[in-house]
Length: 267
Image (cartoon, rainbow, N blue to C red; front, side, top):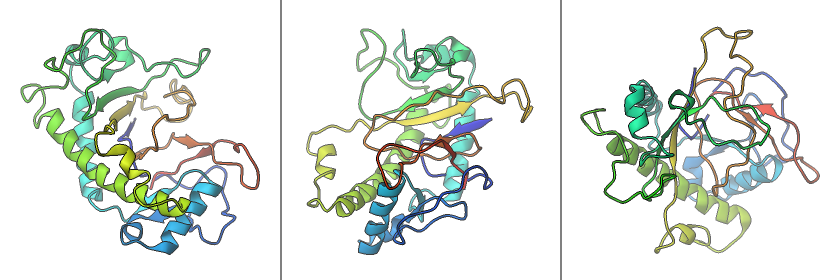
């Protein structure tokens, strides 16, 4: 089983190892770029340069020293996510995305994740989504329609727990956006202002669960697709995972395009 909280990342060192072309970019023990978020928050020019090197050489990075997202807090959120995904199918169906007014999708209620590839395998991932902005895939949805499980169905209430998580990750996102600005040598608030002053906040938290059969390598579901290859459409994605499975396609260093798929270790 894998549950992803849409944010930071740990797995044994395996698969292709990477080398950073720039000495400005520190690496994890498995050869992936790593950035100290606390140093970015303090305005470190050296860490901003490291961030630019990580994005230029790889297109992604691991985040360390992230305020507000302690290991204890993340464990509690995984426990809560497990409770969300253990809710009865009838409750999940009540809060379904398509044909409903809610935010749940999954093959267990006949609503698999929308396909990224026309000929790709059907996704097995199940997801509970949260956003401060009101949008839905349902028809005729209004502001008063039930969106999330109530306290009677899930205690503490879904919206309260996820909004707290949203606020914590929003603080991280602001530090990173300011870091991106320095790494790109653009004026302060060039990126931040796109999400403020009425520009709209369309960030989404996804509590993702990738069901397995518990059989490990060689089992019936071991080699099936959790979700197809895709490029996220947001400005950027924060991810945390508690089991192997996620893969990334780094930039092709020294030229255009991308390299091959590499495992994203769990940290």
